[in-house]
Length: 168
Image (cartoon, rainbow, N blue to C red; front, top):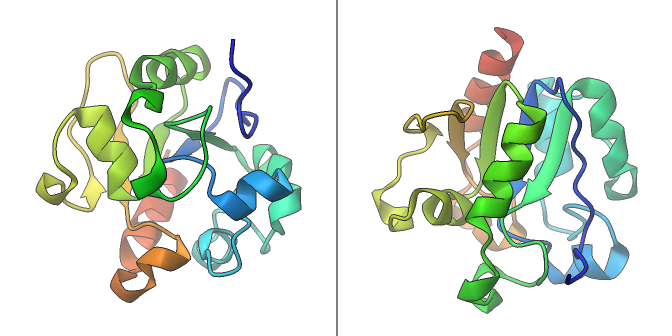
């Protein structure tokens, strides 16, 4: 079995699991989720109240204390979305991991991971609540927090997700 670039941060009873495409190059090098200098992930979690303070990337395991889990669609490769080998996508592995821990909501950080999950082009997906799938928690599709996506950044879907999580 090929080692995972970053470990899953999952356990039963989570309110929310956030799934990215894959660890970026900086995150893989540092061994921490969303560690790139331009990534807005940790800031938006605090801004929306999903976490009570802004965590540092190296504190990524702390999200469990706030009912949040972390995983990626691609666990065995790293880099930008354009660099990820198509065969590294592991939809069935993601589904198994999510069904095992049964969170209240699964949120995709960026359209790429959601597009792979649904098997559709990313351009066909709208931000916000996604289509329901049998035996799977409700899905949210969020703007990517990556620095590479900064010019299209919109925090409102993240705030809407936080309201949905608070209502669980």
